Length: 133
Image (tube, rainbow, N blue to C red; front, top):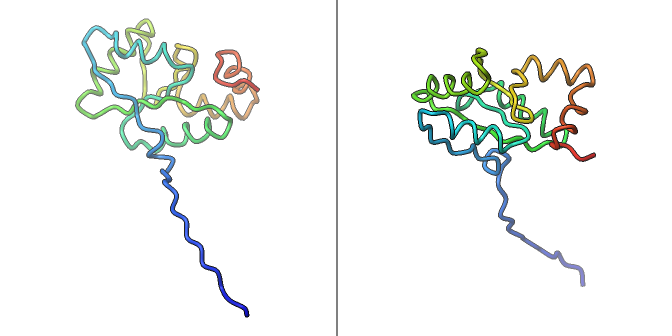
């Protein structure tokens, strides 16, 4: 006797966007919360909520094996966070998206892409401990 076996399984799965929730940020006016977030993460991508360039940077880093922290800034806190990032960087102008590697401003999408294409990005990521291989 021939028959058909039916099997159904349910998996609790989350999408990539759900598993990589943005970091919470409480700005204190003195830059300590932003400074702590930057210093505690080997690689962090900071940008406006829903920014497509942040998504591109994050996907590139994920493709290399780096799991970057992501800090999405609300519109109403953008100026305050940018001022704090400029204080951290010694007064240098910060444009979003901003990528920090090893606690220092690395640059934006253009710098990340240029160093990736030239083959310099992976050694830099290894140096700061974001990659082990």
